[in-house]
Amino acid sequence: MSFPVPTPDMFPHKPKQGLRLAPHTRPAASPVSKVGLIGMGTVGSAVARILSQNASPRLQLTHVCSRTAARSRFPWLPADVACNTDVDQLLASDLDIVVELVGGLNPAGDWIRRALQAGKSVVTANKQLIAHCGPELLDLAHKMGCQLAFGASVAGGIPVVSALQEGLAGDRLFKVHGILNGTCNYVLSQIEKEQVSFDVAVKEAQRLGFAEADPSEDVDGLDAGAKLAILARVGLRSEVRVSEIACRTIRNIEAVDFVYAEQLGCTIRQVSRAELHGGDLYSCVQPALVPLGSPLARAQGSQNLVVATGQFGGDTVFSGFGAGGNPTAVAVVSDLIAIAQPQPSAAATVSATRPNKVSSDFVSPQYVRFTVMDRPGIIAVLAAIFSEEEINIDSVLQKPGYPKSALPFVIAFEPCSASALEKALNRTKTLDFLVQPPVSLPILH
Image 1: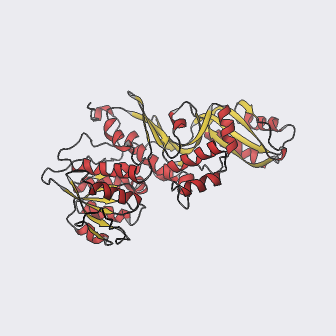
Image 2 (image 1 turned 135 degrees about the vertical axis):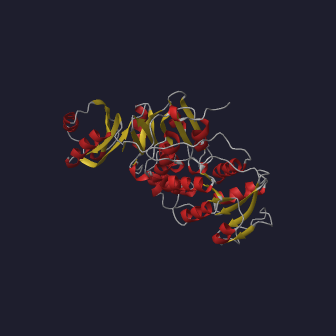
Image 3 (image 1 turned 45 degrees about the vertical axis):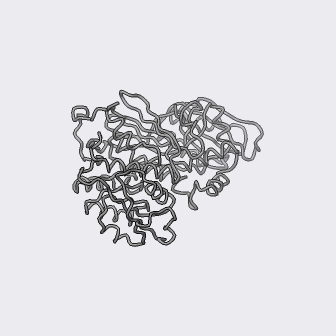
């Protein structure tokens, strides 16, 4: 099946800023591409192993650079692979492609710039660098006549980036949403299944290697926010800064929230979403109620899932285990193989433009859990506040068996803007019957 390449008349607006997604092309002169690998952690060692097992006749691993070079000399690593700690030596060699798997903005950013300036193509899984510096690096790759591929930067082994860039190029995408962080999905799944606290679920995720010692970047939404910025550029052709994407934590989600969510026919997931409305981009990363029948609800454990919605093709779903050494390594090697192809693929130059505005003010039904020192008249007081903000109550849920001193109950509200809800919740801060701040989640349908 072939997909049409977008032409200017399909997207008549004039972009304010160009973003070129470097096509996977390579001159046919060199039959074998020499590959150098920076970083031999979980993903790096998996990439090295795949390449050492002759993943492609067009790829040859020749250099490995690691802080622990001696320990990186695995028995399966070919003897002719140069293995040391000197990045400068690797970059100065006659490599065709550099693979960066260290992560972070610096020094990884400097290494990638130097490689591109030397005319070497680059493959990376560095989501933060691509999210913050993607346009600059892609422009540099284009200028130097080489490639920059970053398919592993979002959803690990799930080929979302290449699918949006190439497979769905003939559609006009206006919405991308999904579960972009396997750590959060595992933690929320544990809270739901085992009815444990957030802290207990995180410790279990750390024990199994799904969560870092400091899980803040994951559980507070920053990791998913960087990935969403990449998907917005690639899929929606909208240039959005990472700092413009509102991110909310999952730390305040408790087991009782899953009990009430089930009464509403839902469960809870950390959802990343970006939608185009005219010239505006709405985007956010936050925990949300999702219907039990939706693909998002069926993503369990550390699975990732992305749904791309187009004007012509409707919803296309990508799912799988995005995290981990092997799945991510597969995405890295797939990018390497694509770059090493003697003929160009169908990828085209795509423009990304700055939206008129970037907002997180979605309109949706809302779930709010209040935990109160019980007494008569509480619901009447809350109803008055939300009524004054023109927010209508849809239903009130209260499960028996909880102490009156810390009674959790839920009010489900009819669709309203996130800003109107925030304004009403700010007015509740002075109420003396609240024993903890309310927990609010959008209800997605």
